Image: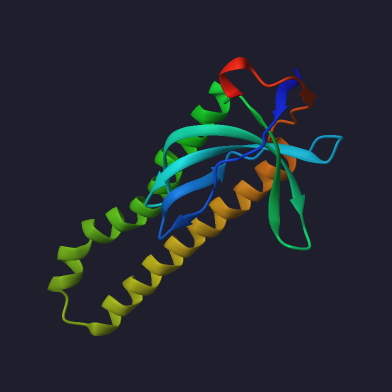
Length: 162
């Protein structure tokens, strides 16, 4: 189903500093016209708090930037997917290895061998790095193959947007 898009004259800036500000999240796959949708979020610590707007973008590969072509209404499914990914999956990947480390902290602290402590720390870092690499690979695969393709249909700006 195509999404209604209207031209935007003054798009809101999408920049963040140290994980606070506005970021584009929830990118769809590129449509036949060469553009895609992304939702602009207010973020804190890099985590999405509130969706602000949804933009139709074209990627400028030479400048490694997105050019905002138009604006659209946020889609509930995309908002829910972004919340689930950023608030459930990513923290679980980081917290799960930490919980394993903490559950074994007493046992490791009681042992006199420094070598076993270093070995456990190495295993912890390997599991954490592997988890992050796996989530990164799955995210790239999702964006390339499974993310929805949304076609844009250009319309007049709604009365509230003028």
